[in-house]
Length: 133
Figure 1 (cartoon, rainbow, N blue to C red):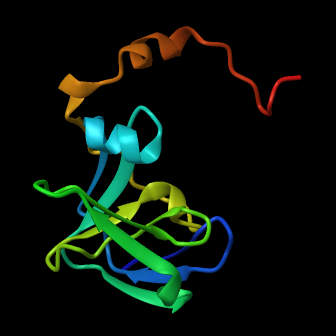
Figure 2 (figure 1 turned 120 degrees about the vertical axis):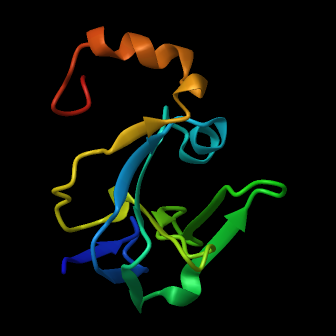
């Protein structure tokens, strides 16, 4: 059984996840684009792993978009995405909030019919190791 540790950007919230992830989806739906401000969300899913808040649990807020299954949890102080437990049967963990290495590769792209138009053109963009001057 794997143990993963994670935290928010400001360090107020930290957590531990015990168990394995079932899947790793890159979601391109319009809801995920809005709440990440990016082309897609990268989330790990587990039906069996358990989440234990190590610190800052009182700084965790959750939001569910009315009329949808779209839900997210985040730090009230810095806004960082955090594990979501709104669905009691499913733990959803934003891959970027983990401090431990993820060895699992993405399982699939989902809601690809909603991909951002500009996402297709990214492959030809130059790459920089840091912010270019």
